[in-house]
Image: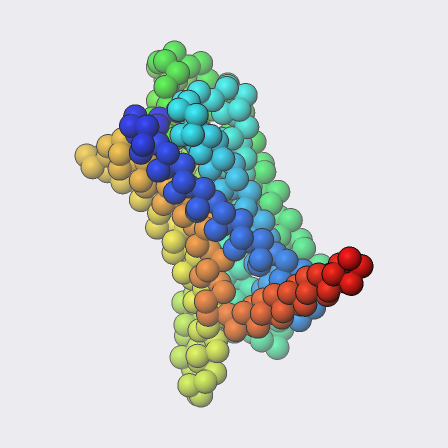
Length: 310
C-alpha cells in the first residue's frame, strides 16, 4: 500500500490524526444509532433510514481507517492478498449501499413534502424495510461482481498499489494487457446505474423545491427546508468528492493529490455526516439531550448505590 509519508514523525502524526477522525465517527454515528433506537418518537421512516446510514458509515470507515492507522504506527505497507480482496469488497459494498440509501432517502423527503397525505401509505414500515433491504442487497451484489471480476484478472505489473487502501482503479493498473476490459465494461454499467440514481435525486429535489416555494408561511418553508438540507448536504459531500476522485483529468493527477482526494471521499463523510444531521435537526438534538440526561442519571444512581454499599 502507498504510505502517506516516509518520515517517521509524520507517520505518527498521520496515526493520531486518523485516530481522532475515527473516534469522532464512532462517537457521532454511535450516538445517532443509540438515540434513534432509544427514543420512540424517532421511530419514523426518516430516522429509520438515518439509522441505516449511520451503520453504513460506521462500517465503511472501519474497513479502511484501522488498517492504515496500523500501517502508520508500525511503519508497515503490506496487506495480504485475501485482506485486500476483503477490504475492497466491504468498502465497495458499504459505499454503494450508502449511495442507494441516499437515493431512497431523497424519495422519503419527496413524499413527505410533495405528497404528505400519502406519506403513511407510501412509506409504511414494511415499505421502508423493503427499500432499505433493497439498498443493502444491491450494494452487496454490486460489490460481489466487482470484487470477483477484479481479483480474477491476472496481475503482472508488480504488487505496489498507488493508494493507501485497496481500490479497483489501482488494482486494474497492475493487470496484464487487455484483460481489464471486462471490469471496464462492468464499471460502465455501474456508471449508468449511478447516473440513474443521481438523476432521480436531482428530480426529487427539483420537485421538493417547487413544493416548498409554494408554502405560504415562512415558518412552514423553514421547517420543510430544515428536514431536507442535511440530506442534501450529505449527498453533495458524498457525490462531489467521489466524482472528483474518479473523474478528475489525468493532467492534474499526482500521488499526493490522489491520497488527499481519496481521504475526502472515503474517510471524511462518515465522520462529518452525524454532525451535518444533528446540527439542523431539532428533534434529534432534543432526543440526544434526553438520552444524555437519562444516562448521567443512571450513572449517578449507580455511584450512589455503590457508595452506600461501601
